[in-house]
Image 1: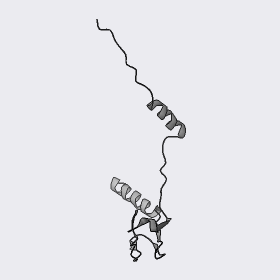
Image 2: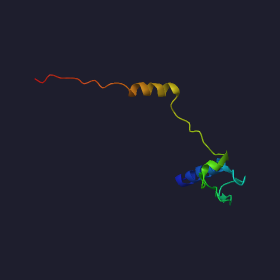
Image 3: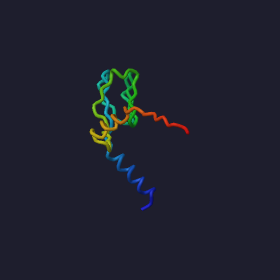
Image 4: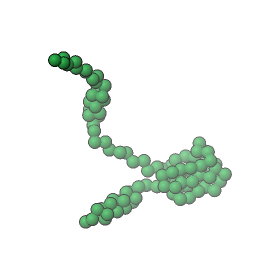
Length: 97
């Protein structure tokens, strides 16, 4: 299978597994989904992962597609790396003969 087909298949799987963002406008109390707008003066609009409005404080996110990213490092590994980062560099003085 070619690389292009594999990448296309992965892209399709990602888009099908993604949940849509649903936002409710507090002014007109309508739920807005992808590609739509509420139509009130606040103009809540959802396009893909972007939510826009005149005043975002007057919006409520009902459902989002927040994806938790898995890290390859465990908590112990992260603590070890943090300790390692704080180490001081020792300067060695060599005698020149």
